[in-house]
Image 1 (cartoon, rainbow, N blue to C red):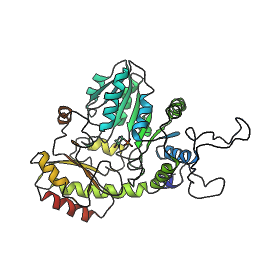
Image 2: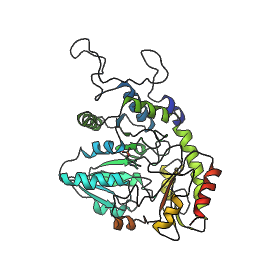
Image 3: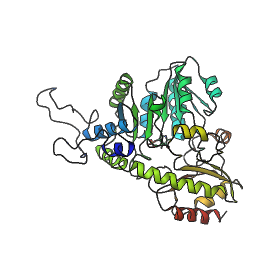
Image 4: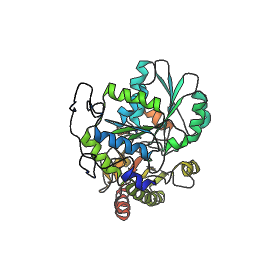
Length: 381
Ligand SMILES: *Cc1c(COP(=O)(O)O)cnc(C)c1O
């Protein structure tokens, strides 16, 4: 089955009870049992819900996995993975990643004796140096947020296997349409379904997809034991969003390519970070593991100052100033004060995250209007 068919049919059947083509919202917390322990596979809705099961099955098809698990948010999905670790275990991750992921590792799990090392994951030698016998997990995010670096997933898998560590890939920025980390050897894929999967900025949800049965059993145990599960209504919304994932992401990629070219030639722009440029340092790696280059772009200003960034951010009309990404509408954001405010400034500057860095999540609007919008905003600087 090809991707455009999977989004609509993968792992989904009409409702067995009524034939309803769309998976119904099973808004129930519990299920009637015929006799104690005699039931139809559903006992209590933290453990199983048919709307959630349909979404989990659909997601596992999209990522070529065998198991999908949904959580109340991307962060709670990540939390389930980190809960598999024990005190003394270590994580190796990137120094350029989603601020909330950094916060969870640094501010929550470090207290439980699980140390994280943040290195430049585009340099295999740095990753190799940080890996040791205690390393249990490589946490990979690619493309990275917000610098749009690309990490070589195959290479990270090779390094992790050397010490028997797991590789988890945060695939939120790419979406399953553009990149399938399990095919490249990763053990677990994470999505913030809040972003491209939901696609309409109306749900917060997270998901994991994996192949290994034993690992899935452990994660499913944690999903139920901890209980950070999404509501059936939200599962319905994400199921609906996924049906147009390929169309939305395709258009966002086309728009982003044109916008990236436009901002690059703008006299007030210093540098544009976009993996689709042939001179992007990891352009070839992106080509080797992604279908297209995504809908995310970052750029900073020649006249680097918070004040100038604020001018641009306050003068767009279609690009809405907001956190998040991956929706049909274009968003503009300021990582230093928004998504990445929880990362200390020295750490931010080390990776090039300056005060004037602006991040775009390009939506599916008409690209001419989007370019005109940016043109007006940049003229104010
Ligand atoms: C948003 C995001 C998360 C966190 O997901 P939530 O659904 O907000 O909890 C994790 N990783 C990346 C790359 C994200 O963009």
